[in-house]
Amino acid sequence: MDDRDRWAALLAEATADTNTQCQRICQLCVDLLEVSGGGISMVTSTGNRGVVCATDDVSAQIEALQFSLGEGPCVDAVTSGVPVLIPDLRQHGDVAVERWPAFMEAASAAGVQAVFALPLRIGAINVGAMDLYRDRAGDLEADHLSAALMAADAAAIALLHLASTADSTFSDDLDTRSAYQLQVHQATGMVQVQLGVRTEDAFLMLRARAFALGRPLLDVAIDVVERRLRFTPEDQ
Amino acid sequence: MTTEEPTTASLVTGSREQRLAETFVVLADTLVDDYDVVDLLDQLVTACVDLLDVAAAGLLLDDQRGNLAVVASSSEESRLLEIFQLQNNEGPCLDCVRGGAAVLSGDLELDESRWPRFVPVARLAGFRSVAALPLRLRDQTIGGLNLFDSRVDRVTPDERRLAQALADVATIGILQRRFAHRSTMVAEQLQHALNSRVVIEQAKGVLAERNGVTMEVAFIALRRHARNHNFKLTDVAKRVVRGDIGSDAIAVTPQDT
Image 1 (spheres, rainbow over the protein chains, first blue to last red):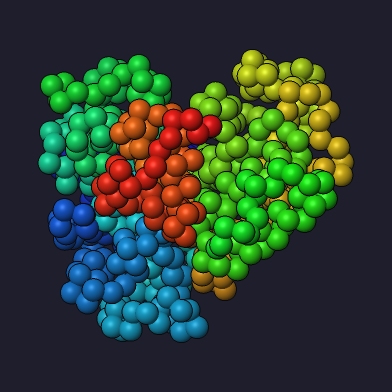
Image 2: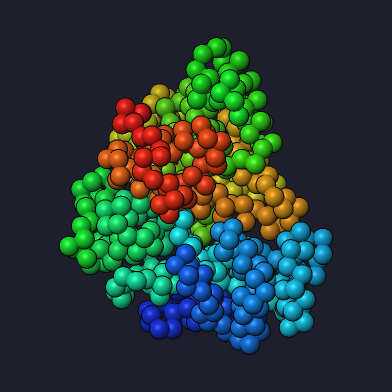
């Protein structure tokens, strides 16, 4: 997709309503990325786990299967933190596929031929995975992969809000360009220590502060890194 | 790894040819083992600064979302990071990655009209010449190696070939991992490298705040702890972020630079 800005705007629109954002992100992928269905599962360090949404019955089955079998591309994406892209489930030469015999059998029976599992994570923060599937074999083309990765970034933040124990009900903007600059992650680590909170909450609080101040996330992060801004528990 | 083995950091003595040979031995050794990709890239940019006698080196990867992300930098200085990051909009590295070919500016002053936003910032930081070499895999360009120097026309054609060889090692280092036969490997490995860097940044933030030190000192402490204990840099970083390693376990000395 050459017009990434348009895709980013669509994702931002999809995440405007916190109640439906995960479902809408998946639906956008189905509508525009030539996949048959999509689903999101949450797996967090604090033990939250479960299927968050699915666009259709097959997707729901893919998500549920992986929890019941404890194996599959989504499980691997969560544990490794790396995308697991399987363009053809029937290609037995693929070592990854051989690792999930039970999932393979059940997914194939459901008509799934390709699965693209994207981890929902920001560095050491892991919140789950997004699975996109196709009823035909074939690679996710480069532009679609790029869009899917952006969708996964949006879904990761959406899930963080869902899983957060802190109050994070502010309407978040999807500033993905600056969200992935080094200083944002450095600042996250610093805020985590300043407040004695988990990394995921520190990340959300940094975003919340930028939102409250009406300033770009990167600028606020640089202020933290340069020690011009400190977070104190009383502020929260 | 035993302490007698050379590391790129220790290769400060000897002739350039000797150091060059030793650098490639170290890199080749690393590539055989189950190595940490960010650690390898960090060694590479350090080697670039040392062997090519340039002021700064950085490695940027296509994050597959339309941005270039910094994965290794010879210095943590925020002004340098900003110059690298600025190239998301324009600059030699962006042109290099888009065009899949080396982009050289022997004198930035003469290229101000080409990169009107990048050049003033780079010059303000004291840089006068830039070389950007592509990280190429067949028809795909996955990123770029940036070399900055304060002198005009710093990099000679011979050195450019050496820099490209180092960029090629970086490409191999990023992509030659498990599942090498899979067509989707490039995306998986790129994302792996990018996320490893994010984990390390989070850990640097934790260490910098706990110990009241700079990001540079935090990184050196993290890297030293990983190398001394033969742990992977990213694994150590992950444990720091999750609080599985206490603040006293990693020796942070503020005089580290």
